[in-house]
Length: 319
Image 1 (cartoon, rainbow, N blue to C red):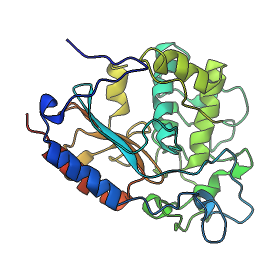
Image 2 (image 1 turned 90 degrees about the vertical axis):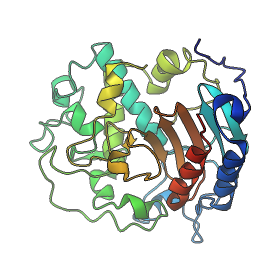
Image 3 (image 1 turned 90 degrees about the horizontal axis):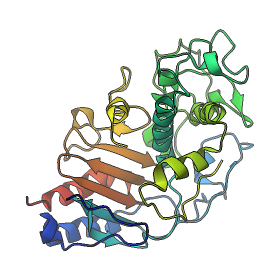
Image 4 (image 1 turned 180 degrees about the vertical axis):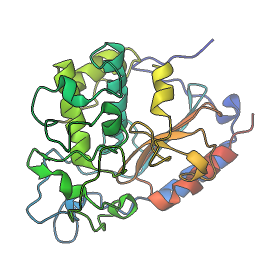
């Protein structure tokens, strides 16, 4: 019988009861605590700027609410039960780009509800505005937006797509990327680039298809049915769609449909290739390992030390 937790109670089992070693889980927790994210807890650089826009022009503003973070926290779930938990996991915290992966789920719902005919359809075919009318944007498909290969050109909410040109994701984790230098655009589907403006364009296009706030759609169609706690905020199902989300992109095999993959075990060498993750700046990770029936949530870990943490978690698995 499959265990399904309620919204108010998630059963805790001793590690040994779910085939894990308590000592190795404690080692993983200690590793996390000793390798905290380098991001300051108030997210401000010494110059007083929010670290998320520290590598953008001085007039670039933060467009949404930002709350200080707390100490590292996380939990490990196996076979549906909590095997380990540390820090304040009940506190709603900033998760940054983890929200990108939620958009992929919402796009799957749009396909399921026939609001999108096919991921390879041009977005322009159902657009409610002229954002896809230009020669550069006309051929962009939903799949292009979901795989970060759209090369969409435009300005959204005061930020041009070029603000994320030449972005190095590894360096931008610490606000040290050299980005924002405009470059010649390529045809859609020919370049992978991590670009928040284009992901926001995807959000707006999905909102136009649902004609409802995306947070409301996610709450009603996903969060409420699975019994998620009600205090999460969104600021503006296992089926064949999951397989589509985890298909490696043609230009970046480490990226599916807004989910990070472990193709070639390049992201986390210690973990199976079949693992996948939602990742946010800072570094925040929801890490899923189907082979070991594991879900691991880790908040505010030094990005470079994530694989060492996952190695210890996997070494705790006994059966």
